[in-house]
Image (tube, rainbow, N blue to C red; front, side, top):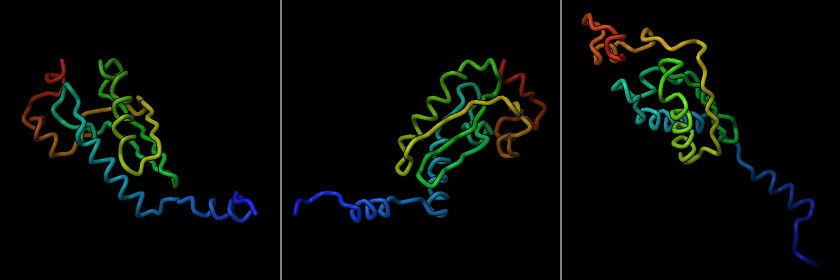
Length: 135
């Protein structure tokens, strides 16, 4: 009898397709956040995750990652570059099947989204305006 894929073999192959459990998704999300925390905005000395540029990180059962992000301003010089860079870095993480990055300006990014830690680090609580830093 020739060796090949019969009906039972196909069913076994389908059963072997692994879907991610919630715990695995959470671990993967932590690895994604760690990678995003290593990507810095070139104009502000803060990583893009702490800066609040990442609005959503969604992971489906197959390891497909969808990231919704923004930049500090619509005319930001890295608006064309940063989403592709994020996609490249996140796609390289073990467990990520593929990555899609969507850039949005709704809602618009605001310094109000910064944590107290980042605000203090940037000196924003000391009367130094955010606009003074950027332009």
